[in-house]
Length: 258
Image 1 (tube, rainbow, N blue to C red):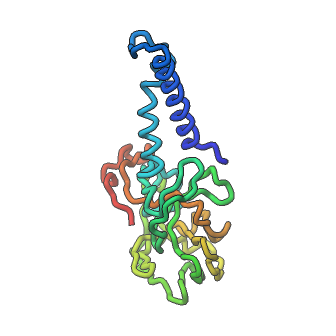
Image 2 (image 1 turned 30 degrees about the vertical axis):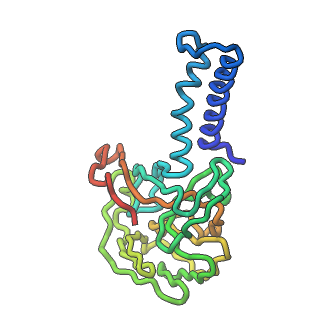
Image 3 (image 1 turned 90 degrees about the vertical axis):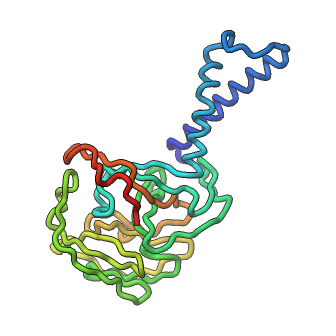
């Protein structure tokens, strides 16, 4: 089991709830009415924090969880300093901490931006775009994708101008890519060699890539993402903060991801 923030949030909920519950049972056994003025300090803190941590746990586990983008692997779609919300229920309801799916809902689709637990180190969350579904044949050659023998159309948008912490991508080729009906922007470095490969996505797995194609640690290097590693679908930018650019990026707040 990975001891992440969700685990400690769960423990805090249990501990504060147990302390508060035991105190109420003790009062009932003595026939004493509850009085805030007479309660021990530890019980006061437990009573105050229990509903807060419980609500946060439920929201993060079943509705939406915030994440901050720490790297440029999903540029230009996501920039360093973007704060995003991830839909936690779109791919099914999972138990907190155990991450076991108890209610199946939707399955990831090509083009979805997904957060997942990195297969080689599950305590670390990654974010990439779904390129291949179970059973798909994914071919990458000369920086061009082919999915199930259908070339993915790319249209040049010119040279990219990076800003702030993404300034090192200035000069990269900015492309619009149509991933079987899902259009999104990508960046490629024409001067960076591109290895060719063909891959059949195993059942129960997903092939993912970063939109910053030549600056992304993704399925090309470590394999596919098992279904049980999925955390959720990124859908919204609620804040951007890049201290190397202009601080708060008001123009990115409220951006719906696609």
